[in-house]
Image (tube, rainbow over the protein chains, first blue to last red):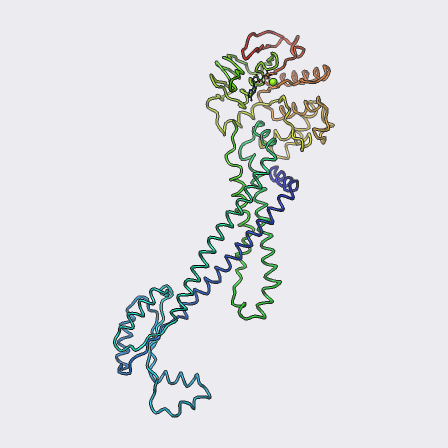
Length: 290
Length: 220
Ligand SMILES: Nc1ncnc2c1ncn2[C@@H]1O[C@H](COP(=O)(O)OP(=O)(O)O)[C@@H](O)[C@H]1O
Ligand SMILES: [Mg+2]
């Protein structure tokens, strides 16, 4: 085993309490990051599925013939944001209603005229689904001749959009704070270790050690502290996943739709390692020989 | 090998060295003497770049004091073994590891280190104390560990600062014998001491420092 690694492990053991404390604190920070990022991930997934489900219905005036409707659709389709338009005739609408009523369709018996309007159902390209684009489109649709009414989930679209933006902003800020916090913990730990061993460092300098040789054990130690913190957080996350989440989601359908980004959590030790090394390098700063 | 040109060194208001001119050839063994506070330690520190001259320049092998930087200072120091006045042994490492440190900073592989360290310890008669810690050793033994660490990396130059400082005459004589052996291998040596017994009858150059100035050169 290389000398630097040996010294790093000796110091890990020698200063075990402070190192352990740092590891636990780092684990908590990374746990927080894991929590925040899986929330963002889930909101993102949910929001990404949304455009496929989202559509606008325009009810047509009874004066509009099917021929007129087809022409209208053709001209609407020229807009780049449109993915697909489906025409639903008065008959189709009635059939759909019948089908949805199932056995209760006798209530339609008394009707001698179809009261349902024809309509077109408009679906959009994914990237076009946002509150502003849709609102603009709907406004122009409302002004068109032959269109009686336009319906879409405006409030829904708006709130999803702002929830997503909100969670992303909060998540990003929180992650930033946590990342700086973890780097700072590694920084202070290594700074302290460096300070406690300053005599040794001075001697090393006088014996002709290079900067790399002096830094190596501290960087290794800081990296290990970060990586162990990451490992600890991963263990907690997976413990939670197998011990609680899987059982809960089997019982509660709502939880089932929450996705657990396991691959990401496997990265936690690596993230810890990176942050640990960063903090250590900053802690040692420039090593001066004179 | 070592050359001082018009070298002066000041600490705040104190003049530690004034206009020193001197040349030491390769393979020489030279003594530096003078009362306490004369500037002997500072003189040695200028050679291993722990201090830098405020005037003039110090040349050691191919290095010049005014051109040293963060990457050349470690190289220079690996060419010089130093027996520090204050020892600078690591209290949490045993004798073997303290001596081995000089090889580790030279990137000698762990496999090769052991026989070299044991050889050096044999040379200073401490082979039996390999596993001891500095606090378990007498002053003379600690002194010899420092000497072993200074020579183990096979430096071209050996500097010793009061190497017999507080040792009894017998131990001191033993250390001088070791130094003569080292010098016989071609190592250039500069030994700072206020103890004239060390250089008496050696026939070597003795530089006398007093009050920051090189006042005289004698023969021991
Ligand atoms: N780091 C320092 N700061 C201030 N003064 C110093 C320092 N080192 C040495 N001196 C002073 O410089 C003078 C020479 O000291 P030194 O080189 O240690 O002499 P010697 O080794 O001959 O006893 C002394 O007056 C000492 O007090
Ligand atoms: Mg001195």
